[in-house]
Length: 154
Image (tube, rainbow, N blue to C red):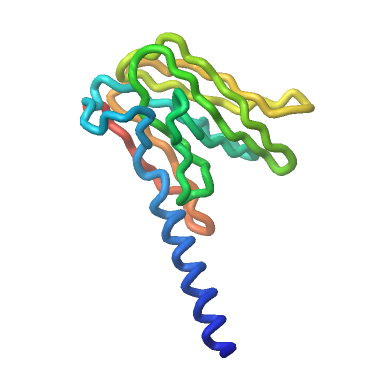
């Protein structure tokens, strides 16, 4: 009986680990049309900041919560126009769920979300990194080195 419990725990740990390695490889879609051309989209990405965790939980009330990595969706594709981005932010002591509005999203632009801390609460700001051909993020893979993943606009 003891062996079965150990085996069950080992299998569960392997499944969780493999899911975490799979999550975040591609940006999730913040819109319904899966056939929409990538060249007419933009990326909203969480800045890689030591000590902070940023997850994009929805775009215009469309769920982008990635279950495979505990909701820490690091990037999403969005359509041009006004976008409301809901986030989950945390550090070692606090969690906050703010939202941002980006009024004039442009195709093939990358919008980077940065976590801020004013001494009391976590917040977020965004900046337009401009038009790009592609964008690369680095996904942590504890205890391994982070792995680079690239999203293109073609």
